[in-house]
Image (cartoon, rainbow, N blue to C red; front, side, top):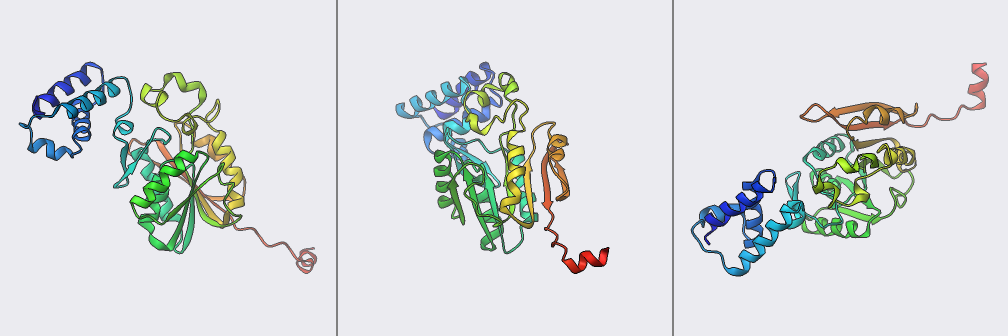
Length: 292
């Protein structure tokens, strides 16, 4: 068949399977099968596909109808204007997470240092590194060695000055060494697993999704860990889960100042940031005596 007919049939198959945006999905998958971009397809609609390409395309269509996300089929996702490679071991970056990058860029000083905890494919860390330039040192951490390998590969491809380490949260980060601790942590309650779309529930890594019965486990751990790794006056920047802003804010003690909640285009609280107040110098004996 020619490309035009192939796209029509693929789109119809996806539509019947209830896949959102069936025509766009058909185009993306055929472009991947032909190892071309979508604009090439439009300019060669009358060309006939070879048998191998047709088989490859049909395989991609069947994977998508079974729920496998396009991003895992084609192995990539755009984020902050860059193309990131993905594997089954990495969470798919969402457009909403770009708000995290924007807030981190506002808060990190030049020169400065930032760590992205739970970096996955490296999207946040690499985007910050490329946008901020050499004045900001960037690290990413992840408990998954496979995810760290993907992040390192993306940094090399995109020529980003970002380093990545395998560890639990920020355990490999030196004390009081960073100005901004940023994270898009797991925040889905395990009690909500059954209600998730199959594309998420059956394909994205569980370790990047779930955080205990209330979805707050990682926020608790990150907020407890942050004062150790942050410099005095350093900041946290977290992506927020649905209806979690009040719970996260309640975890902060009196040391945290300049609390800010940023909503996304849908009006939902999406990003949470706060600044760790610099420690006050201990009172000297003379000062204490004078106060008496």
